Image 1 (cartoon, rainbow over the protein chains, first blue to last red):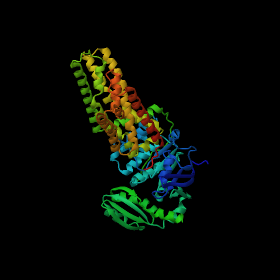
Image 2: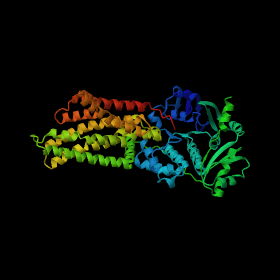
Image 3: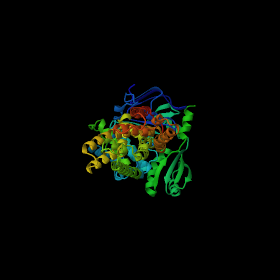
Image 4: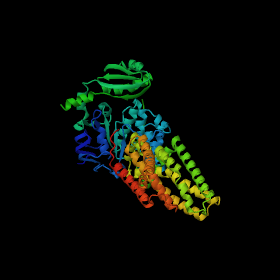
Length: 306
Length: 278
């Protein structure tokens, strides 16, 4: 057992609901993507790794240590939760500084490191605005900043790209890559496979609380490409955006589920995510967020598990 | 699109100890409370109203001819000031009820515990936020009443200083009791409204029925159910005034026992809490 994360037969129940089901996996150095549909057990695994949940069965280690109530280990990890935030009235700078102070960093250093971390994630210009006024993507970046500001050995990122705008995604993915290049380890969850392949080939597929496959991303990709992939785009002008996107030959359909939302389906998600920023930039349309409500991954998982 | 990013590099920064980490939680919590108009209004009204009424009760006691020279027993009146009960309930509900419940609701608790913070650190910090605010109603008015009375020459400085010392002890007892109970209730729910209602239930839901039943049945032992009556019994005895009808030692044991039990249960609960949603 010499992986960054080792899990052997780990199970976690929430009453009668099974969160993790004899989960066994080993995550190595560098960036590992934990990919699975919503409710697969990704957040449960992460909460076990940061010591906020206790496994009912099995053994799990992070950097060689049992994480449950392991206070010294927390200094070595940076955690970016999916949804929660501290207090909305804190500015981005205060938010990161406060969490650094909780790490025991002196005031002057925490100020300096918070400023540097916010710069890394591209939030310098919004650093002195209250986080309650941030877009969802900006909040994700602020949370990423607090996760890496104390220079951890490992980043645990729960859906860090969820709701982020195109520019934010670029920032987040580049930040993660830089962190790994510098020798850090990253464990990142997503329910959208295409988001993770830009930064790593190394993935673990999780479904119904079990690790069902791990290894190279490309073999899985071939399976998933047979299913149209849905992307929900938040924009003030969904019809104009649909017109601009229509030149993408791989798009299968457009829907307008709400006045400020465009839902597209594509057979080539990787090409879609690659081309979208350029189109948005050319047309100067306001795109506030991207999200994949896609169930194609779930279909592949059903296929994989028979 | 072209984005230039600074290179990430790992640094070794000397880290401060546990006290500074706990202080960081306290500072953030106090800043949060001092930004809330409701908290500021309750604090200002509570401190002002209980102080003014405590001074008034003390002065009235000295004015009414009782055949006694001003002595320590006169301070039992301000210590039993019913407005203390009202405002301590209000303060505990408005400020204390959300201290843990809000963090559980907003999942800020997840972020706190993702740092090198133990559940005990977290609870101590929350207690350190609430206790001084509660003390503005439970201790400060008694201290100010004694101070003003001494300045105006109603009492000798010896008596006033002695009264201040006793006020700190009995007010501290009430502060600890409400801090422990409020944090316990706040830890039970993600909704601070429920915790706030619980504080009122503990106070008035026990005090009023206990006093009514005592009158109806004529058995004063029922007053042991009321935290307020237990406190008044202890405060009255501490200032050397005549007994309220219940044994101050038993009352003190009940208050201390409930305080320790509430603190212990809250700690055990927070230690075992698993952050499930999010």
